[in-house]
Amino acid sequence: MREKLNIKVETPQFFVVTGVSFAQVDAWFGHTRKDLKMDIIYPEDADRQYPCIVWICGGAWKLMDRSAHLAYLTELARNGFVVASVEYRTTNEGPFPIQLMDVKAGIRYLKAHSERYCIDPERIGVMGESAGGYLAAMAALVEDKAYDVGEYTSYSSKVQAACPWYPPSDVTAFSYPSVVEAAVSMESLLLGKNVAQHKEEALAICPISFVSKDAPPFLIIHGDDDHTVPFSQGEILHDRLEAAGADVRLLVLEGADHADMQFFQKEIWQRITAFFKEKLGEVKNRA
Image (cartoon, rainbow, N blue to C red):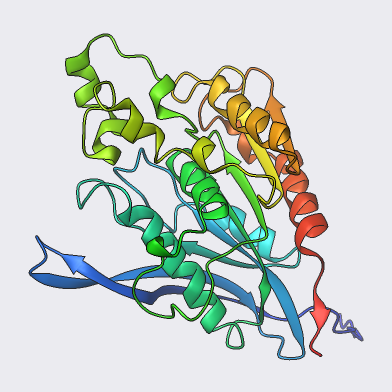
């Protein structure tokens, strides 16, 4: 049996490039250097520019794996985006702000190499889960040049949309059984000090402290039965942004716990795709 097809080419070929070095940072007590890497999913389409979404993995700022969710990110790419999953240093390597600096370095790298990966450098979004949701919110809200260090500093790390999942937004609102237990919390490791004893300093590194009417559009996704990052953390970020006059939506997943399977269902990814298409726009021809 033979079958002859006349296939009309309507979509480009997509490629996954893993382990792209985007920055070099101090390692091993400052005596050595190491590469920070990202995975990039992009279409080979030199005639058009695509909006880009930067994904930031969670893991309590203690662990992260930039490749863990590539299967889902690939589907997002096939809906009209370049997607890059960035590595950042964890709290065993140092406290805040190195994590935010690393994410911003990744954003600048993508803008500097936008031609190579068919990216529109003026249409960048960020998305992340838990600790990565915190970093997505911070990357979207913090515009202080002090956090832009390393290479490609002639490029801005400013982004145009953010989708944090269950983000820690005010670590001073977390409750602990004792001051001693607070000292070993993930939040204290991020701060580099006991958050229960240094609340003012802890608040100064929280997303809610950087909210303004000039914030980019936000889609916050949070389960209302979250036992790790309380639902109130997503609520307070939403309420602060709304009060400031920013464009924000809170998508509440009924009965969902932290990193629940509800977050990985098709309907959620359709909502995410629609949000980024609305705020970043569609693929467009090069001028």
